[in-house]
Length: 540
Figure 1 (cartoon, rainbow, N blue to C red):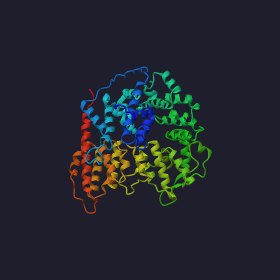
Figure 2 (cartoon, rainbow, N blue to C red):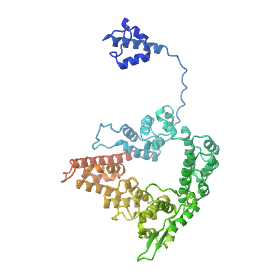
Figure 3 (cartoon, rainbow, N blue to C red):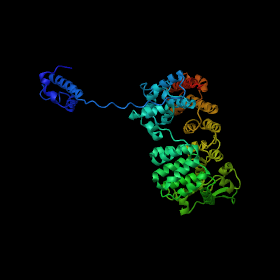
Figure 4 (cartoon, one colour):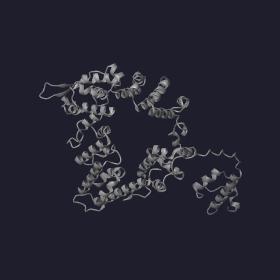
């Protein structure tokens, strides 16, 4: 500490806040009172700050020692293999922008972390204690990582979260601030948490109970239903999507009379997903009355006569009377009726025809788009693979949208109703016919790693795009998806593509170098994924 000069003595009487303000402004703009200007002022200010620092420290009153936190519960899950633990530390050390810009051929390690966590959780490994802070920091910045991180980090992460406000999301994600949910053999704890818990805790409890046994969860909800707030009733009702069963119908039917329009609409949607429900039967009667086969022409044609009004019964069953802007009312009502009707009713209505035969029928008066779009939404809601298959059509059809889908997003939803293998084959056929420009959303619903036919189709399409001199950066999204989803065995087929080709005529400048770099990064990433998987051997 500098010795206090006479010139700095008056400055020593300033408060700490005044000293800080003077330092921030600079002594050339604010001279400490009583000190000289020029070179003396900074010295006087520093001397005064030194004196005030000693005074502040000496004046601190002793406080009671804080209560030592209880130790974390012992970890009983198996420890990670040493190689996997080192790999995890490397993945967590990678941060967006850490390389200072372009990655070149280097893999994006943070994008591999979700896959690594999924494998580690599948084997039941415990997180090494030393990486818990980095894991929680990663989950704090990326909400999509939180479920996997919290499952992997376990109770110790919640213990740490109580000591750092930045990690409180780990406590909010777990009911009871990290306490274990009551089990089916603890009815008193269930009742107490449902009666006294916070809203998030009650939703988590209801969701967990519903996953174990649908009936007790619904009975618990029914016990307090009349006293719940409308916004809470809506969230609670949404948990019934898990394990929806026919026994839920009486409760949902009663919810059709709820005072909240959103609750009524959700109850109607859930009932329409139960093909044997009374609401589904009412909707089938209304919808089939609007659609029929006309045999008067040279070939059978579907004739459509939409409803002329939205009566109170339709409103009670979830039909919204007011159409969106730019949409005709009758068209709007028809779409809602067809969407909510059980798909099995249409085969009976059309003389036993199959979904493929029904979809192939011409529709009169430009009602095809409305009718097929409603059937698409019904197939998605009812998870009907037969109708989804019929509406998708063959992937090689000249109409890339299929016979019924109206958007890529809707086609992706229809694909989700098919099995993994069939889904991959359909998307592979779509890519072979239409290329990758429209396939990104469809690839996102395919099981990972991609099945061999789909992986080959993606690699072949990328190779074709490269040889054609296509603008390379337009495929960066597919490349990123391939890094995470291609089977690592595809690295062998990619090796010849890592060389820099000559740019064809009319190609984007530097396209060949970009493609070579992208394929190098893809190959490196696939090999890294294979190594990661080999390091995560199943525990003994």
